[in-house]
Image 1 (cartoon, helix red, strand yellow):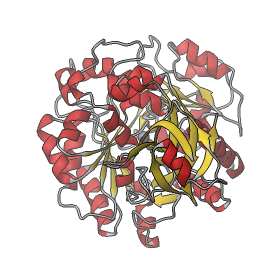
Image 2 (spheres, protein in one colour):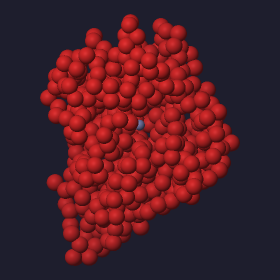
Image 3 (cartoon, helix red, strand yellow):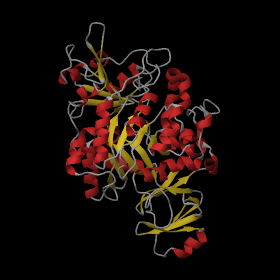
Image 4 (cartoon, helix red, strand yellow):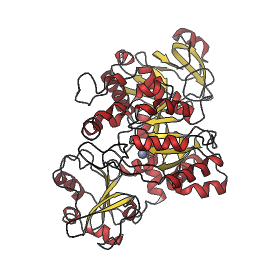
Length: 513
Ligand SMILES: [Zn+2]
């Protein structure tokens, strides 16, 4: 039994200050006194009289294995200059022969990412993912291993940056990233599984009880191994890459199939790039430029993959950031057969206002990452200008009836849901600016934000009957948050300065402090 200040069940008409569970299922919600009478004596009792109790938070877009491994690599997030990034790389030690890092963001640097700067600190190959994972920075040794020379042609949908003399600079964009990524030694299964266990504990510490993961077969196999050894204590909906579609069809994989822990989502395909790399595909050119970004997958290729998936009971999970990519996604989703799980658009960072009603009619899930706002506000203003009206349009999407799932895109942003809740409520940076919030008309209320992390991901994963709320019979996946009640009135700072004090998954406390 757990007593708090208030249980936010998200079931209409069901409320209380306490609840109890047995055999992993909620048995009752109500007043502390009534629950105390109902709950059998032998059950453990948790007393958090100040806490707000919510269903467990699900992160609707993660690259969990990448994050788990990244926690063991050189971290470049927040490096304000190239010199600062290089200094951090210098202190990194090679593992399996390579120095690997992630999280750099050259927006605001005066010196561009360049291989020579890395050559000066490591003779071993160096490979560094950008914060938005749409670019990579490699040193000369890494380029040599990948056999990238001045003769190497840009792959379709990618670009090898070159200097005035035509030599690769070490900066790789979009699909060119894979040229080096594929030669970086993969971690052993022991290293990976160990990193996944650590990362799972960190997720629990932050109140995260489930994830919608967007990764490849190796991550899937790691989740499977953890499940088989009884250690998986996150509800995982897994979205494999479109490259595995033929294999998935051959094996008869279906969206919505799986176990109580690990379920099959949709196949992930990319229609465009990212705002940070200015590769998000826009209907009109970027402000002050003639460049509109780029479609990463052609219309025919994307359409064929989506039809093949849907015809075989597999939903599609489409990455679309720019307004042109979102429109293309809606075009392609129009008339696509439904799978057991809804099709979804990942990010949907900029939608043309004319497409809002269409998005609602299509029945798609909009999977969005409010914490990206924290870094994107100045970029949206600079690159998209007035089109920012359709950026992070939470309220407009919800009002018209689109299901909005919230996530972090970890490691692009922190998996800590407090940051996403803050961003969705306040629409301002951690420094509090702009004071009234950026495009404040798109702010949403606390309960809607919580739904984005609970009931909405349950709907998207086809698990609404057992997850996402705290009604009787639901699985006991829940979090007790020590937060000031002002959070429930929409004060994002109040939520951000609180913390999870108890996390329960499947009835078992996985974190308590
Ligand atoms: Zn992502």
